[in-house]
Amino acid sequence: MGPLRAGLWLKKLWILLQVAVEVAMGKVLMTLFPERAKQNILAMGQKTGMTRNPQFSPDNWVPTFFSTQYFWFVLKVRWQRLEDKAELGGLAPNCPVIRLSGQKCNIWDFMQDGWAFKNNVDIKSHRNLQDRLQAAHMLLARSPQCPVVVDTMQNQSSQLYAALPESLYVLQKGRILYKGKPGPWNYHPEEVRAVLEKLRS
Image (cartoon, rainbow, N blue to C red; front, side, top):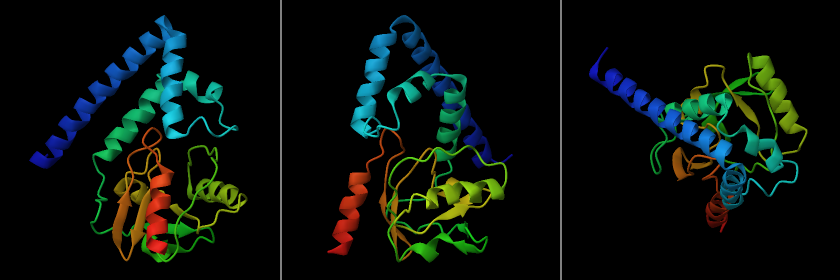
């Protein structure tokens, strides 16, 4: 194991400890002060727009905070951020993606159009490419105004763009013009809109 690999493992261990403490503290606060903890979570949700979607009620997501599943998801997201290769102003990773027809292509193939996702879609984790393509067809049924492609099962795009739980980027001519902060708490679609409107003018 080289020094870089050992450094990555040390960072992962540190993140594991951080997440464990955060989740344990959150669980204690949710147990001792459930209403106050819920108010704080809802306040964060209002700042990020999570409370705006009537189909995404706080009763659906507040109780999931600080659960075992929450712990593993947050840990996975923070570990993935260690491998983030997408830098603002830098060359955009040209990851392989798959069209819904099954044809392989690269993410740069879609740079002539802007992305614009609307509404939330609840999709379970994919076990194979067919599951992933089926989930993408669910998204297509909502008539998005952008091309829809899926990541390969190796999740290369997701890793290079640190796309969990969600990340917003604006790419143009192979460059990253906008790199949003990690969602859902720091997810700001209005910033993307401003960048896209500036590019359009």
